[in-house]
Length: 435
Image (cartoon, rainbow, N blue to C red; front, side):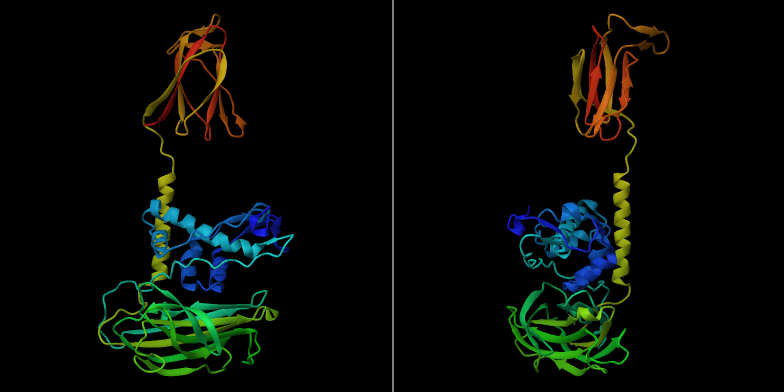
């Protein structure tokens, strides 16, 4: 029973297998459809590979959105320090699962409620931090947006500003934005760089992957626009950049500061595309490519230039994960540290062990009334008792006590030990931890 379903039952959506494994590509596509395209490029390889058992995942409430912040995005990409990146990665996994539940699960007795909006930690910086060039133009970039048909009608807005302009800083949500003939949209606004005075040579081109007649009925419609907001994030004005409904695309010669649509009160800028997809035309796709040139008063770094930040990120991920693997490989202890001693044990019983205990020291204090002896170095005793390690699934193979003082290494997952002694015998069992 789930609270989200009014206390009623929930289950997997028909058509999904019991076990689902999500790949990096599928996560990237899913997050892109939700409007997190720049974030998807970094996040998808990190949280890919999780296996979902829908018989349990869908019969419990979706996890709560942990409320991601820009600081979490910095932490999750801190691949050189697993103590920082791993907890942040767990938050991103929970964030993804809080929305993925609605993708594969449903309420079975009532209507499934609409998923809540996800928290937005912002987009990763596209600027690798190279020295400024001092040239004019100060940025020259190209970005391509591709939309593919999915199984139902989907409309979403994709922020492409960091791919085209040299922006940075904290973003705001510009409500009431306009793209093409659609108003009332929400777009991500970036602070306008103080040196940026003009965006020149804005051109768009269209590619139809499966629509050779270049018609506007392909079922995949991409429309792109530019929007401006004041210092409070209030929408001021906007312009049309182009759309995939046109066989040639659209062209804007330039957008200058202080002129329409770039007014004098502008503090935030947004370049975004809106994808409307008709699921009846499965297998079709369209792409829109946008080129921009930024003109600045002074020097400013390009929005993206070699080295490729995506390649650098993936190399950092590999290095960080390798360090994490090294850190969790068990190291054979050179010495043992003495832990709790359980003295005066007779007959039989069970001892709970500390989670860090990996071995036991057994000392025979008093021999039983009857026992066998094989003289040697050391002496070997016969019929002087047994130890049985216990884990959460049950007992393991018994260990024969045969020395006056003897250590026993415990199997993995041991959390307790049974002892069984003949009449008259007394022993001390001391827990040992890696020293």
